[in-house]
Image 1 (cartoon, rainbow, N blue to C red):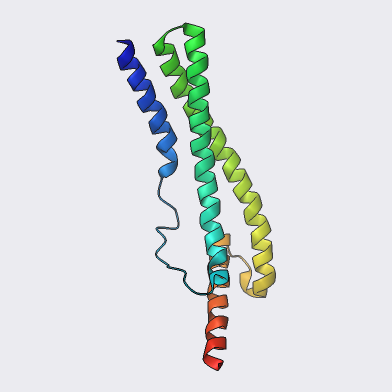
Image 2 (cartoon, one colour; image 1 turned 120 degrees about the vertical axis):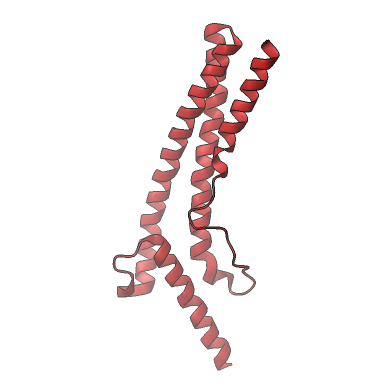
Length: 151
């Protein structure tokens, strides 16, 4: 009976930790960046920020599940208490990690969007960060192509 609960606890913690493996809202990266990596960097930063939010959520879930299991086990002295604590702690940790990650992402979005707006000029009015990053990246590649064609 105890082994069954222990296995269930391990599976629960593993599932909570894997919550961060969700698909990107920008889709799978299909671009192979071989030339002019500086042109792709605004888009790469978008993906990196999304990964940081995912990792923050997964880290919060894993930490919360472990702490919840410890507290639940200590309070009740039973495996069932540890399991309940893991589930509750994992959920709370995932929410907290996600809130923290998204707040960091919003701050980074504001900072980078201001930088992109300065580089794009009036073209950036009303753009979100993803659109501005894509436009800035495309402009950079266009400039590099023009330079290469001129040579």
